[in-house]
Length: 171
Image (cartoon, rainbow, N blue to C red; front, side, top):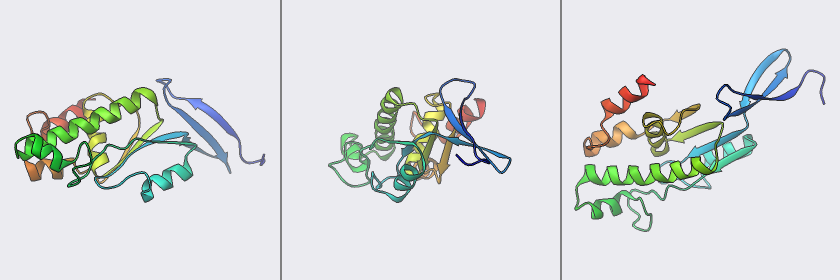
């Protein structure tokens, strides 16, 4: 082991997330041990962001949200939800969002990461996980697409942008 580098595990206040502390040249850097990646709309297991996280964290959890814009074979695809909801875009968006949230909620029940990273569609799902109190730990959102989706298809009865932001700010 190098003289200037010491590794130790630190348990955060809520005892759910562990961090590695690295003391390198008298600088203390806290690094999460595990991460859960919430992918974008058409992305998946072999996407660049997931590969990067997998290579740079001890554990990288990934659960496909079965999401696509047009692929009917994907359980939560917008097109499939549109057909289920009689071509009503806001209801279809809510259906797709609910399906993806359920998948991530089940994943979080099995694996508790130290950090969530969400990109685009996955960033929107991350926002909803936080606003609904399903995730209270650290989260990094890369261009979350929730507002853009709601602006494009209309606010849904369950998901209204101002309410989502209000719930997050109240936490």
